[in-house]
Image 1 (cartoon, rainbow, N blue to C red):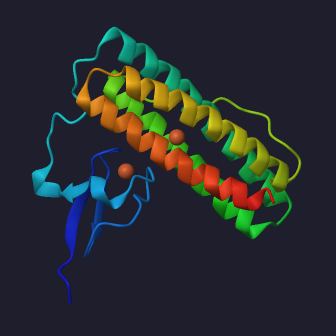
Image 2: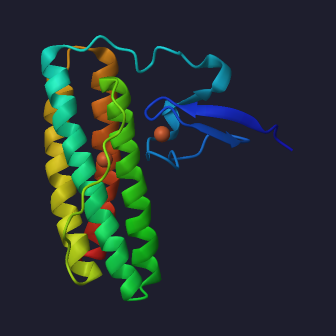
Length: 178
Ligand SMILES: [Fe+2]
Ligand SMILES: [Fe+2]
């Protein structure tokens, strides 16, 4: 049997225990290639000197993530009230991933993650998937711009990973909006 090991995700920093790294980070959704073994972790991964533009972009990204996490939280509650098990699982997972993104961004900004503020959503899960699609589309556009504007290689990498993750979410919503 393969040996059980400790890994860490370089996008959110969270540790993971398994015989191999997961295909997608269970916390932030980043792809397997961002995992390293725990003893290879660079303690300064989130300690990057930030340019003014990156600082500004990270703050905008934080707001987007907090808004989307709250929206998904509302969508999950709507799904709860409809006993829609698929939508409950999907929106709960999305809420947790977006909240994790807000946490990772907060680490770069050296602040503690702000609390989620209540967001409104729609009365059914299909409409929430449609709105989710639009929200992810906006996030992807913003993060692609932030990636291109970042002068720090680490932040270019971070925003690229977010583009990739939010694209997975977009694909999921596209399936569920049919
Ligand atoms: Fe992660
Ligand atoms: Fe996100």
